[in-house]
Length: 394
Image 1 (cartoon, one colour):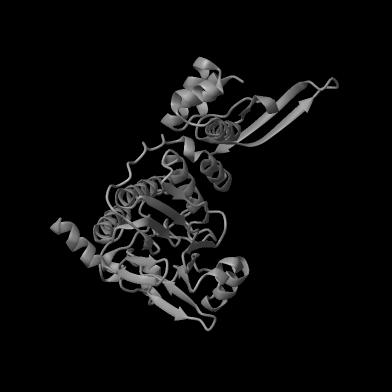
Image 2 (cartoon, one colour):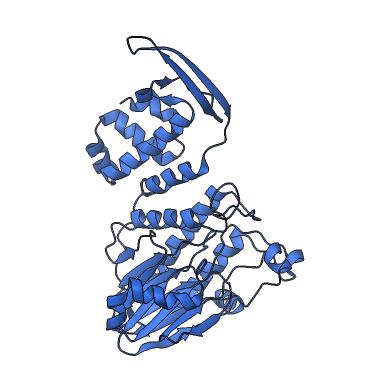
């Protein structure tokens, strides 16, 4: 393989670093040791670079050696082979870049772990911790990347800079207020990102008002989640992360989880749960928590989902809850089956479409404290105003 020819198709400094190391050593194992990453991470990065090259007409193993200019992509290649099976003629037709967003984002998800160096091992906090307690920080639909104007919602502007400041302040507040639990869990109930691709639309294709390009929104969202996890790791000896996939960000949620997995791979006390299923279940003593975004399934059907998919956990537990998002406001429904479905407020503002449709609610965040034996024993529910006031006081 000619690694030097792949340099033209590197799009990040990390990709250039990996390719330069491979050019120097021509050895994946040596490169992995030198850069502190896995061979699989290198292979994923090469796959992403090759995909970029192929989209511009460069893929020697497929007899594609006539690349189109940068910012163009290949529309069609016609190859003619002679009677001996040798390539005789080839026609390459290019067009201005219209990259297949789904394929590119899929490859980005697979290679994201190689794009950032793993975080150094975070020292566990010192002190006495209660092994019977779990503190769960639940982030309602954050909608990073959404654009809202005060003239539309009659309250205030909202963009990704405001979203970042509010969420990091909220995490600071809740970490300060948290009890000495032996475990913390960061729960994103979905729609952390407002748009799922550079098409500026939901996963289903609904157009959206956005404040920045999707790649930038994804990077900022990853950086903010990193801050949240690291702040919680300063407080709790064990931290678990759950990123539910929403209807706005089904693929981006996967990317964020893979990013965090790679970032904290050297921290065994930080567990990032994979975003692969629509449903996630957490068993903690007599507590059984189901987590899902809440789109496409009404609350009265969630108890059936829990008894079917988590039957053994259901039988072992007494306090059964679903934590969901999607509707952007507080709602708590006790089902006849003995299961409670709870949705959460969001820190995000209200965009023009939701305002015009009459939607809106209180803005805030929550931390729920669970006891292994007695279920929920405490809760912090600061409003957005409280979070901001705490930041100013600090």
